[in-house]
Image 1 (tube, rainbow, N blue to C red):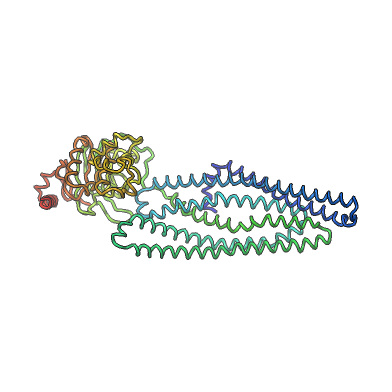
Image 2 (tube, rainbow, N blue to C red; image 1 turned 90 degrees about the vertical axis):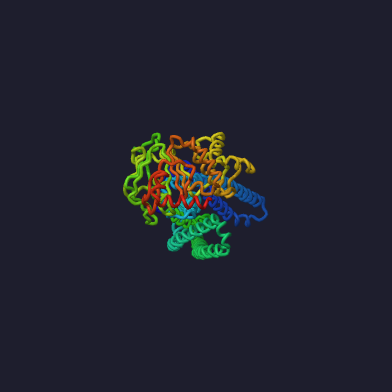
Length: 593
């Protein structure tokens, strides 16, 4: 229950729903406990007059008494019907307040979890599976809703109904009440014992469900790889194995839960038996009336469903506690990257300095940069060349402050990068990643992602600069064509150019291209270079690549190897050095010829 205490803020937010729901529960239960009293009074009145009716025989007095009893029974029936209708109405209101409250809480909690996901740093997503993240925001939040809605409603209903029934029963006969409730402590003990087992097994099931979701998500995302390597059956077998473990655990939990209802029926049956036996003996002694026995039977029937729901409710609470603990694990995870107390938000000029920077990836321990130094002046065009794993993309991650450096310092416009407001910094830097990602939306919305308001003319101008406007217009619905998940409906080159257009539309101060033209042919590449010539005037540009762009006039070219700069200079200077750059240039020239 300690894990569920974080939900109190939601109960406070929707306190009127909870209070009104409690009032409706009280009113509906008042009508419920009135019904047994009507039955008691009617039976006692009939019992007192039935022998008199037989004595009077066929006399007019007997006929009058018979009419009186018939009228009494009919009025009792109508009163019971009215109580049932009124109880049903207030039960409807009860659900419309408490269950609706739980839906509001579910909505708020999902938004809170998703919002927190957005704040967490890149390192968090490196160490947590996407399927697990999805499971916590869907399955776990849904199980918590079962606590804030049905479980909360049944607990309040149980407490109020037990209180009212016990009060009415004690008023009739304290001793008979004591016999009737005698089996209930044993019921509570059995529930407590079983719940401990349910709690442990529920936690295991949630973990297995996360693994199942992660496996399914990976299979869906990599379906083209699976099919191309003819691994469909292998994927099916892996999913079946994980699913089998999940099925086994859930069946095991169901077997444990199956103890609940037989136990309920046993203890309720004992209470009913004691009511008849002890009540009958006390009726013979004149301590209670026959109507009181019927009244007690009704009270036991009223208590049957709430008490039998104790196990179900306790199980929901236990599962919700397990799910909320899993949610809390992420909600209590603080982002590694956050704004300083007085973070700077101002126009970015584009001066960048790396000063003795060393960086080690926290999730792998790989040292990507070591004692790295680099100065980029505003408006300069820089090319970063190197083999795979040399540390090229790491520069981008550090510039966007996806990670913080382990040693050294990065300064933007002579201000330490940690003193910049994240939103301001990232809002003025456009990044075209190596791994292109398009959302399952229209082409126009993908390009206009960085705009506060959609501007079709700006979208089209960006597409023209990225040399993708002609391709888009040939699509079935032009700019309104849905790209599909991760842009599956488009070719690799089209996805790269749309991603480039998305970066250009922001009109950034710094543009970073990370292997962003690898899937583009030479002629299209030259068109893009020509289009960007005027656009990049006065802007800082960093082009990360493993090959050389001949048409780009870079102010500085650096060659990386194992996190160190091994060569630096412009094209002419590097060719004179006859080092790695010169060899790569000559090799590439020979291949192209």
